[in-house]
Length: 68
Image (cartoon, one colour):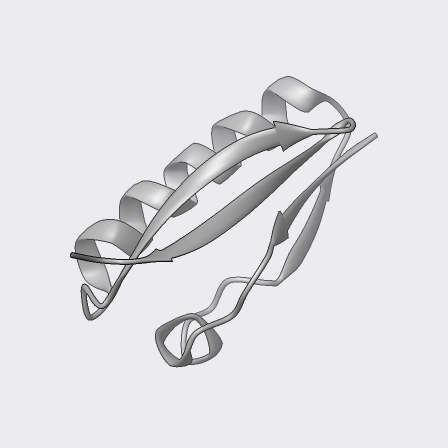
């Protein structure tokens, strides 16, 4: 089992339909979902932050950084 965890939830994230933690059967599924989430968040959110996924200790962490 693998989990996608959003490290920090900004206002745009809290107003979205995404969950802060999502569980998957395989790490491949978790990585695919995390990458999809990052693309959507980077394209559709307010652009104050940039999101990227990182594999850490069997889970996928979505990290948030200030944009610019």
